[in-house]
Length: 320
Image 1 (cartoon, rainbow, N blue to C red):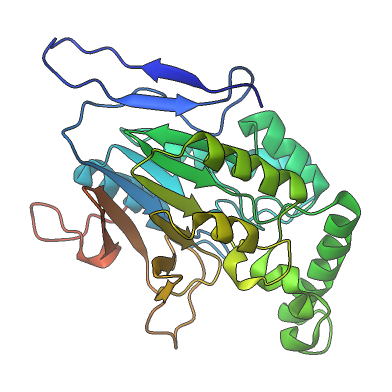
Image 2: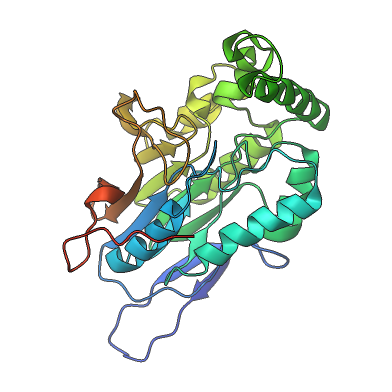
């Protein structure tokens, strides 16, 4: 990556505070939709969407887009699994990403892409992502708050193909095309299927980012799979060690069930869904968007979509 650049957004009122957005991607495709942000006061609010996959239910994400416009955060980020994916057909990849991006274009604010295992299932999908969105992991700084956008599917190509083939078999078992149970499949017993993994290159990249951004007021770490559950060198541990004396919040998806825990005296959140599969027996499996107001410390508010009402007192559900 080339050294960071600073974008200062213009405003018509000379007395207004000018928001600052810093990143290090100077050319080629970018994993966000816009670099234009509305003016903010001392604090700002951003939103997070969760998983759409495992059998996306129609209308949920489109409704979330409409609700986010009503809530009006400064920007929206994701924790991955944005398309059903899991394919080697580039035409199908294009169709699914076109569908997601067309709906996302309805947002009135910038959106930051992040990949999950459905989005980055195999090397072909990885290449497709890089051609369309650029880097799979990256960072940006907004109003002196650092965002680390991690790729939890960052495996060597050979291992990625092995995981891909095991996943195909597991899906056939789930669909009843092969005998057995998912829990007995090779894929279910791979640590990568539950907690993901990252390369040394990615770890070194974020070590450098942290070293170059020592004065930020807060750090948000976003990822799809819970890398903090992986205990070897391919998990979040090396970065957690560097972060032990710094203020940060970790946010991930993948489990389709909301949970919160305190780890290293910091907040660790696992988000549920924004249209993805839900276990009907899980009381913490619900569709939601999450608002984060960045004041002196972050104020995090998960909002169940079923409770975000319009002026008529109803949820204005959208049909795709």
